[in-house]
Image 1: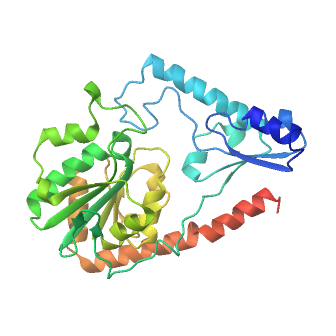
Image 2 (image 1 turned 135 degrees about the vertical axis):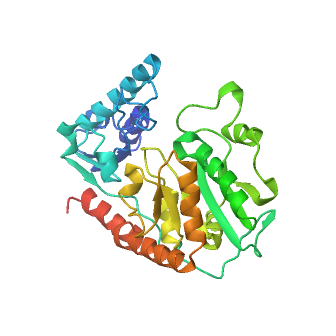
Image 3 (image 1 turned 120 degrees about the horizontal axis):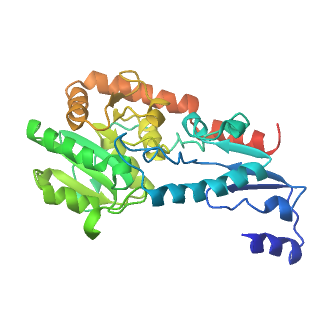
Length: 326
């Protein structure tokens, strides 16, 4: 990064007035040294609480000594960049609350924004994905994730699926995402979390569909055809996918964890359940499946939330105002 910035100045004669960068892995560390008169704007996503159980896991989890050291080093880079930047911002109030108090008050909260013109409801859409046609399905429960991992509640969701499949013989379950771990601890013994769940058994694989990584158009199709969309997360960065599902008018069942609760209010614009309680998650899914009017009202309220607080154009305007000092 330093060499790239130096090349801009020395080979192309370019001297920026504004430099904006992501401050997770050190991209903004030396910008003020190279361009002291430029306004440095840092996007800050996460600050680790070193001794707490994974900023994310159950209280009984013990943080290993090596993990503590790793987090210290990750935070060291973030702290240096907090000091180096003239303007600091983060997407959510929840994420802002994780940073040290001496910097927190100066941080702005501006979300990246959701394209509400693209992620728009269409009740006539049928689920016809590559190698999967559920256009005749009565009930479709969907779950989308970057990676199938505990951080995003994958194992507990699979337990909820086992319960739902026994109760509702016509319910189809669609899972989108990669079979790998992006956040947190990889599965033991060289396996994936998906492999572990399939080996447990108790699943009707004829009504459980793993569709892999979807294009944006395919994701939208899945969400539009969904009867209930499930999003689970430990207390960590909130996924765009949840907000996209809300923008599409999905009836959302989600975890009652702080990042979600910043957006979702139980029985107002979604249904919330204990992240670690598969029975409760299954109950919320069934509550929605049993009540079409509830699904419609929650879906409409979910979309209104995104239109009001997270639509792309408003968020872009806030970013532009920040960049140009308005």
